[in-house]
Length: 118
Image 1 (cartoon, rainbow, N blue to C red):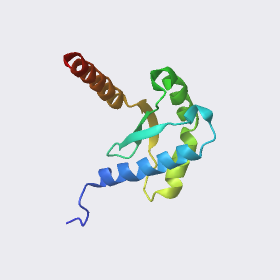
Image 2 (image 1 turned 135 degrees about the vertical axis):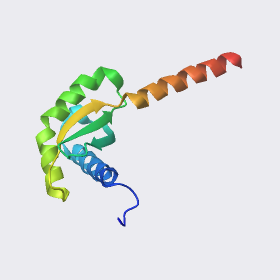
Image 3 (image 1 turned 90 degrees about the horizontal axis):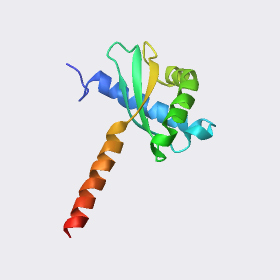
Image 4 (image 1 turned 180 degrees about the vertical axis):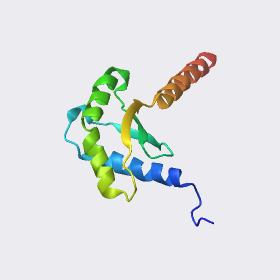
């Protein structure tokens, strides 16, 4: 029986999320200013991981941000390999986290409807 309260992949997601977020902060690339790592999901076989990111600048900077992250992918994977004690370092893929943006739009619509009622 495991002494851990939650599954290994959840612990690994959390660890890699912290490593990637810290390493992105250390990168000297203005295209990555104010980038937030929203979540990270590792596949069970540890071969791939998807990093979900967002920036306050919105959709107008998405392509530029994703391009910069892809350029720094190897360095980020190297940091994972050095800091995490795992058998295999997953290959990172970067995606924009649309959930946060959608939630913001829904809140705006609800706020607008509420203001119209008042």
